Length: 157
Image (cartoon, rainbow, N blue to C red; front, side, top):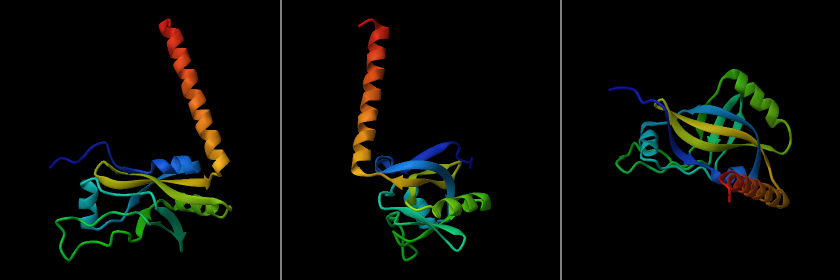
């Protein structure tokens, strides 16, 4: 059977980009059990409550909900168990250094299959205050309005 190619998105944490200011992004592999992979292939996962932590030189993904596989038996997995992240030692060192700063957290942005392997995109992020969120929305809307105006001008309206 030929190997999968490309990137297949499973779940995305859209709220994270609104609630946090993203500083750096890393791609990490996941250590999963068989029924978790089957459940992910069915496109079922939730990243909203997820976060990552570094314990004893290892990165762990916590709070991510991968529901039990429907066809699974007694071998089914725990839906919210901690899953080990596969990162290089250089990436772990960089993350550990960044996490020593106060106010930073590791959050998952997206979960996907890349060339047949389950990957998660984690970000080093700083939480935003409510006024920062409103300011970011206003900037986004003004940018969108400027693009619309230049589009209309180029079309001759």
